[in-house]
Image 1 (cartoon, protein in one colour):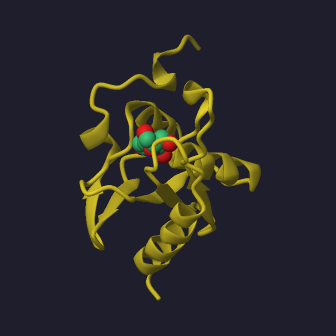
Image 2 (cartoon, rainbow, N blue to C red; image 1 turned 90 degrees about the vertical axis):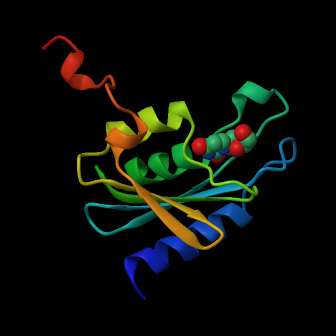
Image 3 (cartoon, rainbow, N blue to C red; image 1 turned 60 degrees about the vertical axis):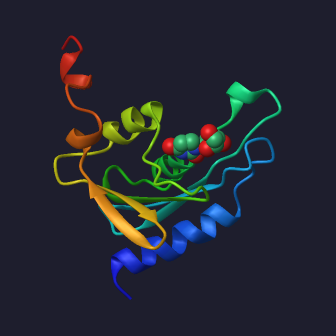
Length: 132
Ligand code: THU
């Protein structure tokens, strides 16, 4: 099985675990880190709506907890009819652990579209802007 197939399968598994009783919009994310470990996330909503978590944030949290430091590829799949790219907040979160080679892969109807960080978040803020 290729890495892409693994990420697609794992993201589907994650999406099925999403807790999204309010939006009924189910999202799964699977990322592969620099150690070739895969980490998963799903969206987790809350009755206090702003407290919900996105799938991408969960996958990043799992990567950090496991000792991973950077994202080689992250694949996102969602339940809606349209192709969904990461929300603004998740773009910034992904960027923190990305470089110019990081692939952001969107699986829609089993077709994968590839973006890089600059496609999704041009002119962005990062640690280079902070004082030394
Ligand atoms: N959602 C994600 O998990 N990732 C995104 O990038 C976009 C939105 C979730 C949040 C919420 O649970 C649901 O999708 C509807 O916004």
